Length: 82
Image 1 (tube, helix red, strand yellow):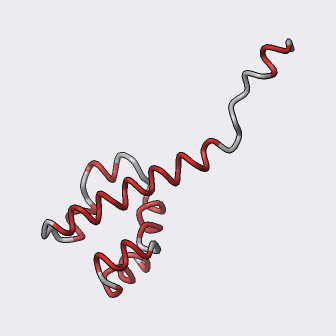
Image 2: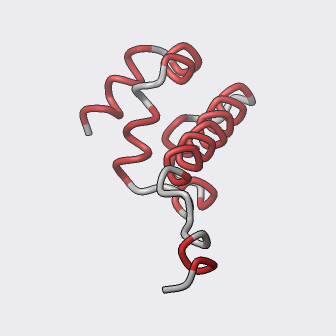
């Protein structure tokens, strides 16, 4: 293993920041679509969300305060429990 290959390893923490950024984009999408008047069930079935996040990732969105404020506590609680 040469010195060059040693330094070519990827940052092991890079995924942590990417996930947060992706989660922020998903949350912004949910909030934006909800503000246009779409039902939350329809938004959660969008291919945009389904292609970018697992079922667990989508449930975790409803733990975010910005999502809870936007869609309401009762709606967020329902998605967290499903």
